[in-house]
Image (tube, one colour):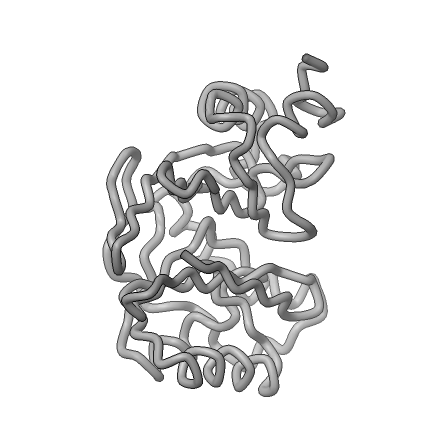
Length: 216
């Protein structure tokens, strides 16, 4: 099992390509914005002879979806998301304008299947279990590989921080509870791949995270 990390667009979003020896892969949070970023992601997939089985998102904040339509155009895949975040697409132009992005380009992705709590996504010899962890956004989800002991968590949890909860649909109490009951119950050695910034582990965040850590 391998995980390739790309940091894309001016907001520094982590896009992940997960793949194994079968050559099948999944793309999480396709956020490539500039032409060279799109080329970099595409070339990695082609150069490694990967077959893209799924394109999924941890949530639908605008900075995490910039590359979704590009992937759809290249591989014919529609984006899979949690339904509780779809409302965020309604005011996408306003979000882009607020952050100084060009509103003449339509980044609204084509939505395919909806992700649900405890459902499983298969690719190659891998399985990702879905945890619904609202609070940063109502439809934020985590992708957990129990066998390999890692979780791709989007903006739910960061190295030393948590996702902001002052955006539409955000809720600190919800986010904190979800982290405590769904992430912090995983084995301490579970590696956390966040939507921004470096990796961390469940054990490290339980002990040291200033927002949700227990100090134990």
